[in-house]
Length: 116
Ligand code: FAD
Image (tube, rainbow, N blue to C red; front, side, top):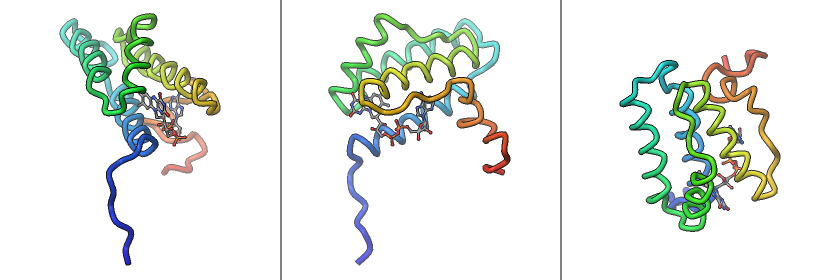
């Protein structure tokens, strides 16, 4: 029988969410308006109140206190998101991601052409 489609567990939800968050940052404006900056700050904060993994959400709320989102540009937001994800990676014992390659991973594809 075909495998049933089941509710997302913490890992699957995490992978899908990081895909969304990094891709959203990758396409945020280079020069956001004051309104766009406020909106993105709010989105990140609201997200941390509703993310449906309570431990993850609580951890994220604590991180936001000490490291608020840098919404000043596409580049800064992408780097901020990479740093947040690396903090979570560290806590979970996962490898650190090289943040200089965040655009290759989430926007342009690897420079060796493997995504073309
Ligand atoms: P993921 O960590 O999901 O990463 C997906 C892909 O993103 C990787 O394959 C890699 O290509 C890329 N990537 C990795 N690191 C970076 C980076 N720094 N910047 C850019 N791209 C990167 N799980 C828990 O068990 N406990 C938690 O407290 C917890 N908190 C979370 C908080 C948030 C906000 C989110 C979104 C997820 C959280 N998770 C948590 C889930 C966890 O982070 C992983 O998503 C999950 O364990 C699956 O991991 P993975 O190895 O498949 O890769």
